[in-house]
Length: 389
Ligand SMILES: C[S@@+](CC[C@H](N)C(=O)[O-])C[C@H]1O[C@@H](n2cnc3c(N)ncnc32)[C@H](O)[C@@H]1O
Image (cartoon, rainbow, N blue to C red):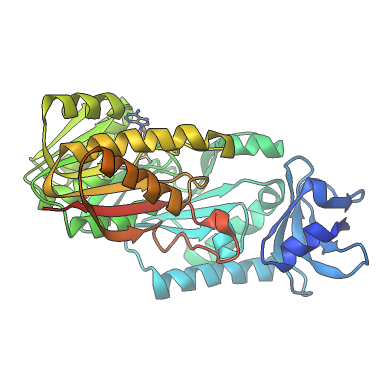
């Protein structure tokens, strides 16, 4: 049952009709009866029904649309959405080891993430409304998947925007902290309580598989975290070097190396900007370089600095590549468009005096679906480039 009706401006209504699920607070005309996190009906100024949404009393995103249908968005409806998300994965993006089961707006379940690591599920509810649905979500996960364990990773700082506390822990099933899961023919250990994100960067799974087709010779994996690219590509390389600034991440990377019996991988704690500058100046050469930095532009206002950062990294990396070598270069900043990223890397290639061929233009793994009318769901850019001979 819906608790209240919220009236929105014509601009807010236009946004909904254009296929975007967010209504900003500035477009809310009347929400007097809506409680924080309530499921509400949305109407326009002429009281025409627009849909059902989750209401936030705090965030700038005041409403997150769940459906335009008139049927009540009840537990059954929620369960259908989870089933639909699972069906999409089975049909389009099957994965054996670790993958995303629900990717918020991309699966029509705004502010909800559910990742599966083997038979353990990790859940994030990042809005007041989705947080209120947590008990129902736990029941549905039990019913549909019988998980060994369900872990909550609600320790994201974005919860503060919703007046929600940061919290994490096992909320159902076995007290599990770590899971070993295999993907792309390699095994990774995931720390579901202490690792970054929900334990791993699942959005790069298909890019690692793609990069494996080209990797060769000496590999440099910058921003390796727990060795996602380095461990996957080591099989195809003579040697691999993984760099990260986090000693904890590198300790996990070493475990992943051992788990896969790899003897040609080294790890080094380093600032990748400094390392690449020194490598360029000392004339070090590689045949494959991976750049997967954290998001440099978290806000629109960071764009200029972010582009400078991407240019610097790509310039140095291109200079250290042998002719015929491959650069796998990524940006996970939503605010940097693919066109801007391509332009920045092109400018780096010109400065490096390198002719560069675009082998593949890629994005996040397909279990992080991009919704056509919601540009925010397309955040990861991954270019696979070759230095022309
Ligand atoms: C997007 S994650 C990398 C994910 C990884 N490539 C994978 O496939 O799982 C970014 C990583 O960069 C590291 N990092 C951030 N700034 C750094 C810097 N200046 N130098 C080296 N590592 C850095 C973080 O510790 C984090 O592990």
